[in-house]
Image 1 (cartoon, one colour):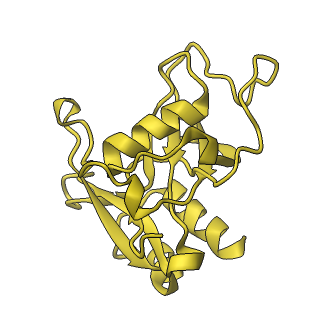
Image 2: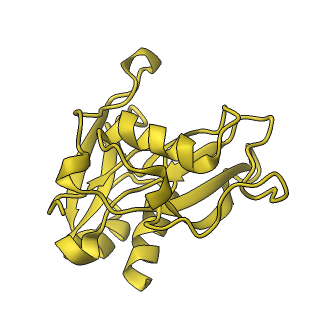
Length: 178
């Protein structure tokens, strides 16, 4: 296992075992015809001592935003495969889709977009790192994977000086509890 875990941009959380597979009979796991944002995070801080996040360049007045990796549900694929693609693109880790464990889903941007976000968790190893990640440059993404020591993950959640996504806070709080 890698001792380093990264936080990634605009994300969902990816767990380490598929407890629920996508099926056409389950609307919570089916991609809709509309594009939806998903959140994803990979990491096993409880074993290695570090949590993961990504730093993306967010609101110009703040310089950057700390987020989990994420993407749009804009393909007719199982959520786990979309999440796998986003993890690879943004972090450089080639995670097996079957290692992604669904944690939960929630709505974000209530009152404006009502985006449905899916959170998954998974563990990553050094052997899974196949490129530097960084996002899709043609889409204007500028992502840097950053590593947060596990003992500082809650401090990160409650640090008002850091610009961070609510999904990152939820992911770190979930990990701390479970």
